[in-house]
Image (cartoon, rainbow, N blue to C red; front, side, top):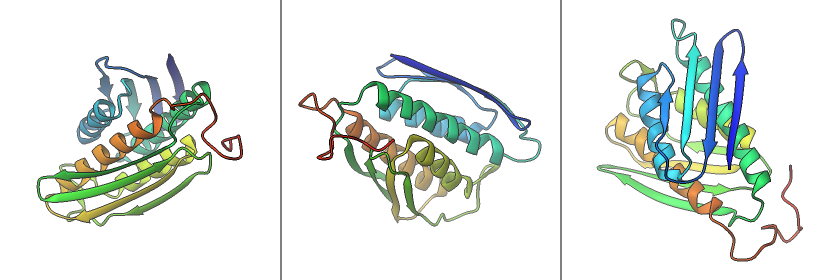
Length: 193
């Protein structure tokens, strides 16, 4: 199953397709470091992505980063609504050399992000590290997930952010795994939407 959203504002023009499987991803956001993180996210989550973005990066990378998070969250919500029998919970500790990140995911229908990460530097290349939290907040709210992200050990800033993206991707992959039984993964019989 493949899901696609096209979104256009005065700040960004976005076309993203999300599926499940092992297909190659195509990611072109205009923000090199974000391309790298989204490629890692796609690979480790098992969610192949086609992303084409034109954004106002001459201002900065904020609108592009946040709007991609919005659309990816909306696509993930479509995916979970179309495939309602999933494990629901996932967790992952992820080392990236000297750094260590933890991500815990609940496909709950109740959007909440606890982001506990202080990065060693304010930039990786030209990318503002404060945009990492903006990306995850946009993603989590629009996907209606409960997510806790913690950077447990610092080090190289690139490694810190990479560990977070990989940990989140792998925790999400666990949460999206097909359930053992064909039932909604809630004792209430419904996931909030």
